[in-house]
Image (cartoon, rainbow, N blue to C red; front, side, top):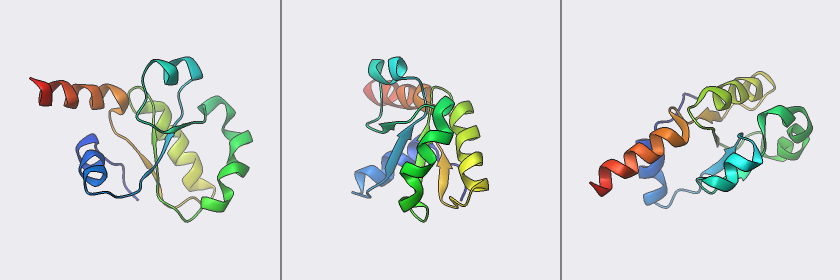
Amino acid sequence: MEDITVQELRKRQNQGDAVKLIDVREPYEHEEFNLGGKNLPLGEIQSWMSELESEKESEMVLYCRTGNRSGMAAAFLKANGFAHARNLTGGVVAWQEMVDREDA
């Protein structure tokens, strides 16, 4: 699977698609602002792999602040058999910019 843009994610959510979101940022970042995803920090990826094992065939969108950490997490998951792990390009920064443009 390819990366997913904030616009594509928003469209899918508006259509009612159930998209599993995983926030790979640190807990303090997640508390400040998040997209509703489960917080599983990148630094603990080895420990939460087993938690996701039952969802290996499910699509999941990983996000962070700008897409760098979530890109690494998605690549790691793909290398370990999670074929449907996707990175949210631009992360929450791009999401907030999109929302700001919509509100303007």
